[in-house]
Image (cartoon, protein in one colour):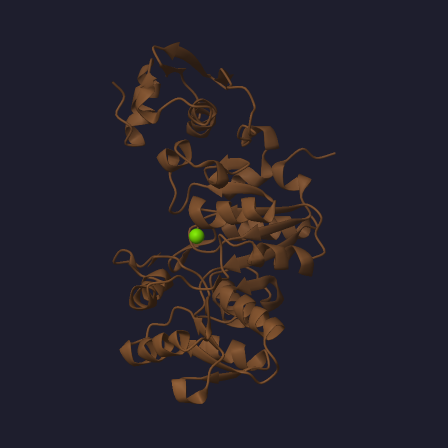
Length: 341
Ligand SMILES: [Mg+2]
């Protein structure tokens, strides 16, 4: 019998950027972790909010980085949005597409007609990220929604990572219409909505899926919304301080420095359940009360300290009331940009 974290699940759903790769480079250990899961009989899925590539392109991109992936394992917000539109609209219905060619192709393959002007009578607007999106198509989309077309957004990520820093993502382009129309989209498809995760679980006929991500506000909130367990890895956007201050609907089940947590005992990455009483020690760390706050004492692994402190801050201790009572604790909090008093 195995007690490693992944052993408790029949499907692992990976976010891509910040989990499997970082912008354009694979994260060390990710390819091996995915191969190891496969050889142990665990199903794999990849779920991405990026709507500018099709599943086959994403699979090819992963394979090119040394990560084995099949197109059928990839779910994009573009594919999910097109499937949703096809469910709700009659075959051949005109849909005004704002986004990349990949998104137009998804709409076409779903049996609908991609169009680009108000005059084509669109009954829906589907808006996803595309590097060529400009004012003319945004103007047509504004007019179409104003005329009564249903407004779908593939996702609302404000930014896209790039080697030069964060760039405007689809959420920024959605904000153009939101400002012009003074209203929100009718439907948002990508994470933190549960559609991608639920589709992945349904396609794999999984009963115990685990979602793995690097962002609390998309991946982890999406897992919570889908009723799935989740693992936050600290190789991407969200860091220790974000986790300590996480809102209740963005708290993962597990946290790990990276994907190697999948192959260690589940107890070594577990975070407190809602309502669980606060922990006092993990590994070589222990917590003592200090005024209205807590003091971290001892030494050990950073993830153990983080889990222990989460049990304090998630049950009401303010982040500003966390102090250090050992040199190791002081160094650790400083490395997280939490200045201990
Ligand atoms: Mg990510």
